[in-house]
Length: 64
Image 1 (cartoon, one colour):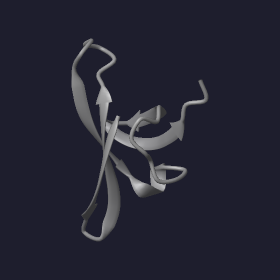
Image 2: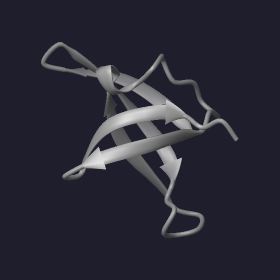
Image 3: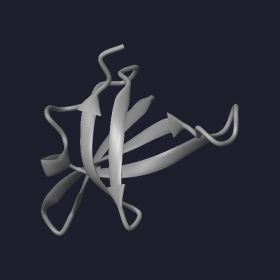
Image 4: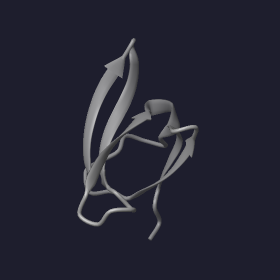
């Protein structure tokens, strides 16, 4: 996973580049608002993401 921080109208977001679970070998970008993260993400970490209507509402570090 790669991480790229950026701002939209003063709000911090992270663009996470993650493996697509539906297509092996494909990488997709997911934009996650700072308030949905427990702490700043780092490249190589694994997360469990929750979505509502296509928007990320939560991101927790995977424990395994």
